[in-house]
Length: 114
Length: 109
Image (tube, rainbow over all chains, first blue to last red):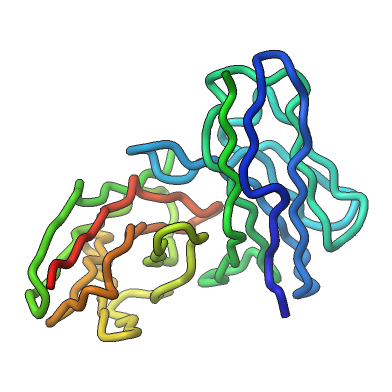
């Protein structure tokens, strides 16, 4: 099992450019999440999905869109990148959202917006 | 909203030293508590967890006990190794998973 994989690993964008980050999981998990990690702030939830075809906003959703067309994939889009979106992005998945349920994380994508 | 207060870093220790990283969770509900570890260049992975009061999570020599009266979940290890150098995140889940800011640990040989 590959677990949770993310593509690409690194990316540099210019302000105003768009891009899509791909997350894939092979554990048949229902729930998937996108987080951003900034220095001194831990991880903050951007968007999440509770199943194929569903999406919901997290703590910091502005400037991002997501889609979950297939159960195993969760895409994060930036339509018009801004320097404030420079961050490390992590995807995660979990089988459910019950008490004590572990989230499994991908290796991250480091995005720099110039 | 929910919040996690975690001991600030960075923390630098010599090999075989004792480690404590404090963590306190503030929430309206009754959260499960977690410690995640992030090794350099990798994603987060679960280190240990506890779902109810007085539960003790343990893994790889690390331990943490869920103290309900203070909603705390302090991470401890009796003798750290160089390979423990990483960033440690405390997290709690009453509704959604909320992370602390992380503590960078460096262990010197």
